[in-house]
Length: 429
Image (cartoon, rainbow, N blue to C red; front, side, top):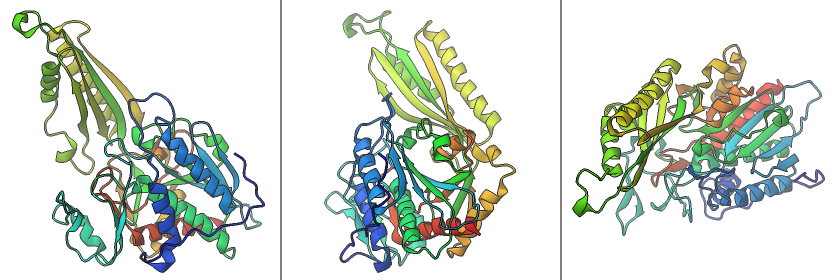
């Protein structure tokens, strides 16, 4: 929908009894956003992959109109675009900020019940006492970096949704802050929010030309202060196995058990090259799921590596292994479907170091050490960079994504919001 630009900015609702008075509107936005179930689904073909994502998208687009942003549009696939007009006469580059609103298929995003642990004391956080669900610094030592801060946590039965609704809240709050403080100079700012990032399709239908920015930043990183412009090369691999079911009493020489073949295939994969045994720039094969009966079986893998040559070798390994199994069990019995998802954005940012330098300065001016690191994952920014929109990734502040122990410090969200404001100001300089 096109926005009515005569509307005035509305103040976000306050949260009585919540942490950090100056952060109340930011917290309010975040808690509003996570109340919507926006889980994406990898097996679906359409966009968005789940219709419920559109329910939140309409709510978000309406709220952008109500706060007075211009050119607010939402297409049929749920891609939202909006503009904060320039407040300076000079010719300033148009830049953008992007976040995704779907949540991971790995953990339920329905009926999220967040709560705020004020002034975290460094101990265990009991999420559900009756079921013994506890988030402990013994397992998650990164919690100790946030002692004294206010942590938003789950009830232990869903993820939180900070990936990436924290990013959305920070971007929207930054736009509201700039509207309320016209003394801060900024050029034309474009913002966008999209579905299906968690299944690798968030940038597929992103309209870079319509967005119209010279460069952008995704607010989709993790720990406070992080700046990322290297990411995995990524592919998915689906191994399909055809079995043959026969009554077990008369199966000798006839039955072909697809479930057993699937287990055999999984055992043939490199045992040391998995997420739980790798770090830094080390790549991996990750078995994300098995569905198996005697009659048919499917193994789902993701393949990751920062180095493009090793990435191609990993894909070849999976294809060759499937060929070995097909030779062993018969033509057409084992088939590998391997599809590229995204590539390392680093090569697209070479020669554009000012984009990184501006983000680094913005983070430091918000009172943090800038921590440049390679993403052990990917963001929409990787695909967008290859579509002609250079797009590094900045921290959103959440930790332990995709599971029940996910949390986000309020103070990290505030610093991320300030980083967005700083970038807008620095570009205008």
